[in-house]
Image (cartoon, rainbow, N blue to C red; front, top):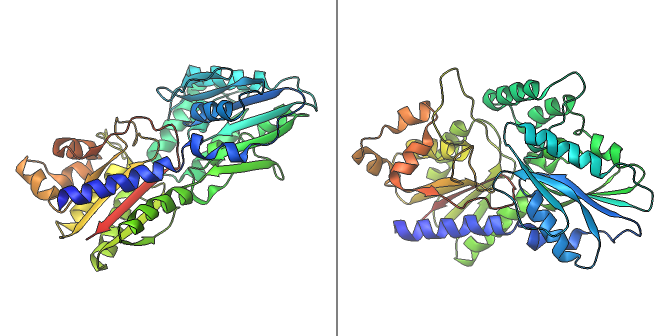
Length: 374
């Protein structure tokens, strides 16, 4: 029973991620090539794979430009240069990358076209401090925001005020060339001004969403329905404290009759106090809270993970829980509540061998959560 649930949940998670892969979705959103130069720039965890998909779709078009992605998230390209930088806190390579992007769009004409590739993570990967600020200033702000538990929209509103490339400033630099943005959304509500802090967003601009959390959840739902399981999508934009959501959804799951799958997406937060946190991201924290609240309730298993393959800063996308998770943890001498309070969910799931490890997926439509009631 456990093996069947784990296998199905992993298949559901993988289907959601696959649905958002650039090589599956990008080509149909491309504009016509320009008569002049075709410049490709951008940033994000999916920027390199988006660039590779664009090159594959336009094998006979002369392309040039540069994109910046997270370390370890590169993909092979022939013409578009791929740079790598730090995430979630920017480093000097983030500044170098942002400068390279701005240089690539300088001096263009009305015959030229700029295609901007934006995905989650661009806020850190394209770091160009506004005059009067330093990289160190931006690093301090980024670290404080990440620990604050603030929602992503609030974080990115602040980031835009401190940047010479975000908040439409990249778009301004592209004038008078034609500008088209292709974006993969990782933010609740798919607000284009929030995705990557909106470097190319301008009111009335040509902004095309090529993949969204809702698309990923629907692909996951199709897998469950094909297996004869009823599906309810609770929303693609759930926010709030990860541990609180875990408790809330445990109550919902215990009221349901199976077979049923509860799906949700969005981006929760983890508020870190003054104590030094352990390891793990918001998805693992959600799952550990869920497991504690379920307290071994029979017939309920769950998976949660970040679609980019990295939950927080660890080497796992997320994890799985089953009705025996707490029993197995107790046998190993683990204290789930203490681990949750110290934000050390990674140690819990690592000890149980219940981590979901995918490596960088090269896309990013935020969190995928699935609760299976048998």
